[in-house]
Image (cartoon, rainbow, N blue to C red; front, side, top):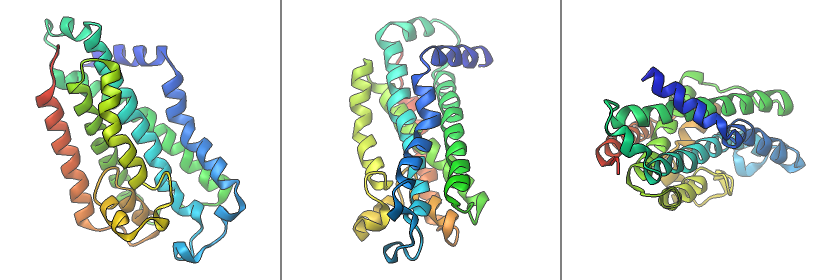
Length: 241
């Protein structure tokens, strides 16, 4: 597992574009959004909070969705397309180890991007730290695994890198929309907000842990179910060829 992890990390860093985007894109979007004066003013539509305060959890979605639903599926499916997985099938490496290596590498990049964005939000726009940091971390980890699990399902099924990207798009756009990336969640219809509270990547639990009462247990349970069920399904569906 150690050798596999090191090798996959080297291969990932040979094309550093995704690593750079994963680390810096959320912060870049934050600075762009925060530069709009209206985003830094309290609004009745957001319960008296500034839009930038409530936008931070949605920015987490960008890092998770991009890496989990674009990069991982394409990487694994490209291995399958080029016959790399066929060669690995002759070794003792189990599919779970290969998928775990992909998750750990991309999770490290995603978390680095989230930490940089949170630090920038605090320094540049005085965005307060989460009221419940433990629950925020739990929601972040569950959201990360649940989103990555959906990407692993696409990676396990697709025969080519392009096919993997197409499969992952089925989840990518709904997650970005429900996560409040395209339109702030307070401006979404109530039914859409309610649906988004129980699906990956858990923007509502993140937001509640940030500015509210810590979130509802059922929301965390739904994220855990997505994370566990998606991971198990990805491993079962995985094919070397």
